Length: 242
View 1 (cartoon, rainbow, N blue to C red):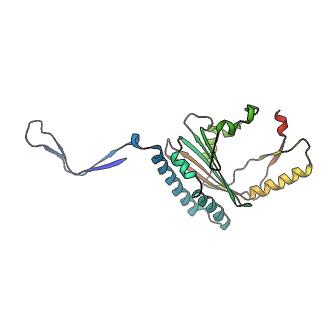
View 2: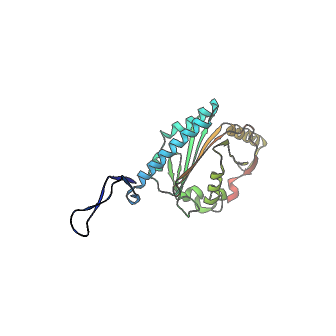
View 3: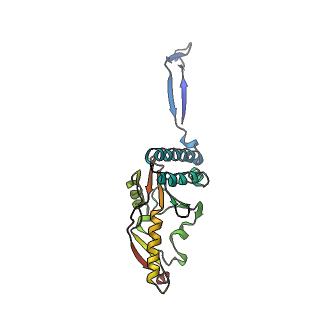
């Protein structure tokens, strides 16, 4: 958009002679050049807004030292990742972002999904900064598990979930955890899985972001670990799919 300031506006005199002064006060004309704005420039404005909002929430809502450390770790990692660059250059009406920090091994994982209006599944996916083939991401080889896309991964339930999040809340985690095992399953393996998963959830911090480009809105949710995570375990053997 561009602002043009005109101190005086003259028009041609239809009766001849000198031009006629029709306005003396300062006039501001707002002109939109949307058709001239490249996707990259639009993305740059979006990524800058996202970065600013994220820092505002961090400064206002994050109080404890442990939370400050974890969420600052995620935010600082953005500078070294391709997240903001992807937002600058990747087309999509809706962007879903999940940035996770795992305290135990001091690592982060970022997942981005870009949807066009009317899509059920994303047209572009980045996982750990790498572009993924959508078919390969959602479907296993040979299409043997083509029906296993979870409903919550589709656009409508996903956007409802993201919009329901509070700005600062306890981690939203899956209450059903799937434990993969071989043909022979041992009780000790199940107990170790439960212990490992509990420790993992207690050290997981996530920043969820939804960018709605059509309506120029951004939702951000800082989520901290649950003190006492509760979940049930479902046993799963990949051989069963055959």
